[in-house]
Image 1: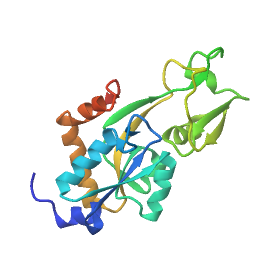
Image 2 (image 1 turned 120 degrees about the horizontal axis):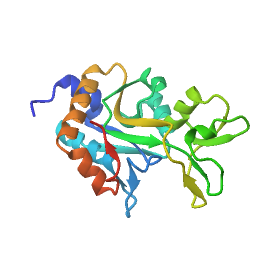
Image 3 (image 1 turned 90 degrees about the vertical axis):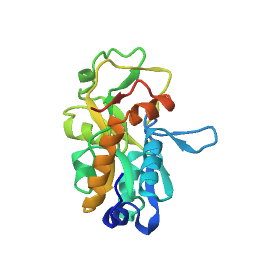
Image 4 (image 1 turned 90 degrees about the horizontal axis):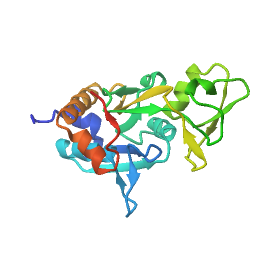
Length: 215
């Protein structure tokens, strides 16, 4: 690695600390370990970036992606791990995706629905995590069904997963807009980590080996 430029350090680690937003609302990306400490692919990436920059890592945890995005205005984080969405791109510079997650529905085990398209009907109410990428996508695309937003959407054993997907969620690293040097460094960092197999190993280590690593 070449020397880190002062501009990159100033934008990614102001005050000499890398502050990373970790979202427990997406269990593919982050989980609580037995000791309660954050773990998962996003934690592994945050640690690796802090090591490259030569600064300590401070993790700020959230229980929903919408809360991560809201905390941007407070300056709570320097990097985050969020899905690429047009609404967010107005305030965030994203890397290329490192993980692809298929978005589908949970329905009651005895429900008549078989495909994701069956759910966009008048009179149907669909629960979604408030501010999540699924919320943002469905807000743009649903024509008839109604969204019911919850702080955190959870699974239930009485439900089954429908076949197919209504979207592919592209998970990426995020930097606040206008931090061009920092954003360029993070984009290159993500590409290197994908090429090295780092993403695949980190997913496997956290029990998410079946998740698709973005090419």
